[in-house]
Each structure stands twice: as structure tokens, then as C-alpha cells.
Length: 363
Ligand SMILES: [Zn+2]
Image 1 (cartoon, rainbow, N blue to C red):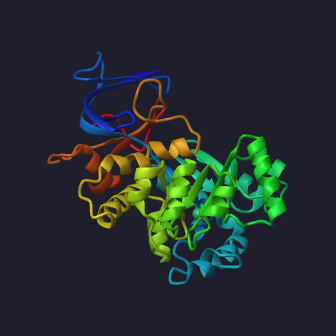
Image 2: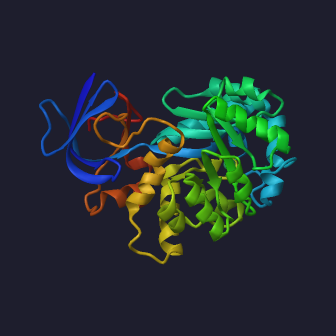
Image 3: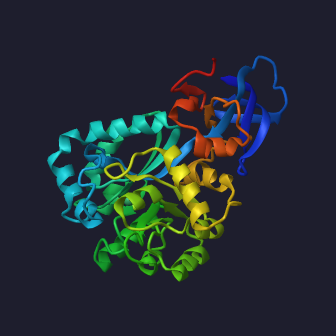
């Protein structure tokens, strides 16, 4: 199947460089990106902006059924051991799959193409998410060996997402790490969300860390030296009242992706996450030159790198997974349009492979 889109502003390649031109897609992959008029038979995008789809690199879909439940309580009381979240998932177990599906539809509406979920509840929890999975999304499922053997868990998911670096006794943790590495799956850890436990987290040789909200600067340097990517969730951190990650410092030092974290705490809307992260980074760094493309990359293509998915940077040979936004008449900067002006209503459609969803290419 071949599709040619013309008269578009394409945020091209890893640099997300705005290119006035055309895009050819064949069999789900980008065949060509070029300037000027495209080959014959193109669909006129009327100067629409084409951006890679968002990647929600860290989410907990399981608690979608408790949105803002306990919103005025501490992080420990809400999502800690024995907290509200645990009770909610236990008592409302029957509603969990429907909640997950609703959040997946919400992610699709906001232009998300892929996500990474920290799935609680052992093997049963992983199976629940697989059964609820929306085929229009790519889901990377990181389970926890709670009540399940780690080997049988890993046979059915993409890796392990640890609650903290000390979630299990030392010997057990070593067995978990060895099993994940042996199977070449992903190991991810929540780190320094409330206190700095970066040393312990790095000791596990993780593929990525999540949060770094309360990491000392020397810990951030260690993360950078170890070359470990990070997933930041600033809106969830702010909502939980636990502080904010040092976004500018991390952007300079390591690969940064963004996620929306618990649906109980925060909406799974990457347009909002990108806007919040961008303004926070400029405000915290007192830096009006901070490039919007760094944040757009963190919200789109970087998450796929972190999760081990094929790139959707819009260039030849890559996955054709992108959003088409309507062109606003008075826009100067297409990158900033995506990360701080556009809303869900500005999305004309989402293309994944050859499939168009959430709207139409034709106006
Ligand atoms: Zn989390």
C-alpha cells in the first residue's frame, strides 16, 4: 500500500527539522521525505504539520479506575505499599480492564502511538493488560514478579518495572536482574522519586530509570556517566507534591523521554506533558533559548528508543507513525505549535503504518 502526502510541514528526522514538502509511505514504512511537490497522486495536507506520534514512556494503566482518588493525600498513602491504590486494584479488580481500555482510547485521541506500562499484579496483571490491549497502540509491558516466578513472568512480557531499587530482598533482586539480562529483556526502575536512591538503582544495571525527581546533582552526573536513559514524569511529580526533576540538566546529559505515570494521579495526555515539561525547563533554567525540539523529541522519538521500539523519526526506512495537525493560520513555529499551542481538537488524524485513525487525511 502506497500513500503520498503533499503540501505539508514535516518535522523531519531525529532533528525534527521543519521541511516544507511531501512524504511517501509504503507498506507501513516511510519511503521518502522530500522538499517541494511530491510524486503524482498526492493527498493535499493544506500545509498541515506532520509530527512523529507521541510515546508515553511511563504509565500505570491499571489504576485508571481511580482518577484523582485521594488526590489530597501523600504519595505514600496513595500509591505506597498498603495505600489507596492497592486497595482500589484489589476491590475494583473487575473494573480494571475497562479502565485500561478507556485510557488507551484517551492516549490514541491525543496522538500517542506507543507506551511503556509498569504492570503490577504479577503474571495475572500482565495477562490482564495483554487482553485489554488496543491493537492500534504498541504497548511495552513491564511486569513485576509479585506472586509469580520471574521466568514464567518474563515469558509473557517485555521486562520488569521495579517499584524501587529495594523492592525485593537482595538475593531475590539478584535473581530477577540475572533473569532479565539472560533473556535480553528490559529492566526499568523508579528512582529518586521521593529520596535519592540512584546508587542502588544504577547497581541493578537498568535499561532506564524513571523520575529522578529528588536526585542530588552528583547522582545525575552518575546517571549521565553510566549512559542510562531517563523517563521523566513532571506533571505526576507536581501533582503528587514531591518536587520536580531537573529537566534542563538532564536534557544536556542523557537521553530523556517523557511519561505521564499513574492514571490515578495524572491524565495520559502527552500534549499536556510536553507543554508542561517545556515551560518548566525554560522557567527552571531561566533559559528562553531552550529548544522546543528537545522536548518534542523527548515526547515522541526518544521514548521509542528507551522502550526498544523501531524508530518513528520521519525519515526513510523508519516506521510510519505520525500525527497530522491542522495548520493554524498565524503560526510561526511548527514545533512550538505542537508542544505548546495545539490541543486534541487540532489533530486531523493519526497514521500508523498505512492505517489512518482518529480522523481523515481528506478535508
Ligand atoms: Zn511509575
